[in-house]
Amino acid sequence: MSLACSRSLFFMAFIAGALALGVSYYLEYAVGLQPCGLCLLQRICVALLTGVYLMASVHGPGRLGTLLYWLLGLCCSLAGTVTALRQVLLQSDPVQQLSTCIPNLADLFATTPWMFVVQQMFEGATECTYISWTLFDLSIPEWSLLFFVAMMILSVCQLLRLVWVACRRPLSGESSHRALVGD
Image 1 (tube, helix red, strand yellow):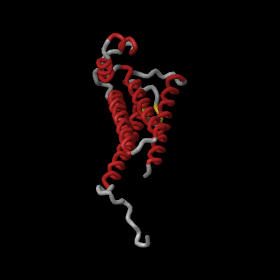
Image 2: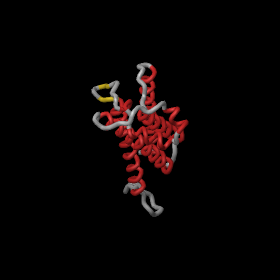
Image 3: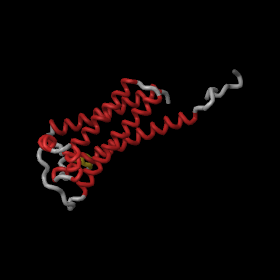
Image 4: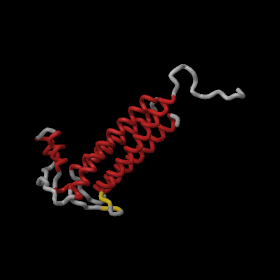
């Protein structure tokens, strides 16, 4: 697979991320669903992932740059997977003791350190457990989890492909293409 193919893969991943962001904004502003703290963290992960893939598709990097962009994409999708999985687990276990409602996130960020706010979001709030919308019996965090897992699989496959191509390259200065007998 040539570098042009990896550039088009970056562009297709960017399109998928842009569609996921568009759906999240549609559900918030057109349908009227209010996102919780974990939903906002997932949206940030999708935005970062989409930005990385847009930069990669515009940049058209070489082998090392392609490796770095896929690693960045893997990190963003891993962070999104952890966040979405936490919200799916919160929604599937309604008996779990949850903290009371977290105040407005803007006020919370203004008064406390950001790591404490993220920790409180991962501990869970009552608003993160409500399932307000489903499609094919999957909630929004479950769809988000599927998206992030798909992006992780794509990143891992591309990273393994890059490693495979690098390992097959000969160490000496000779060509890796076999000369045909008739040449």
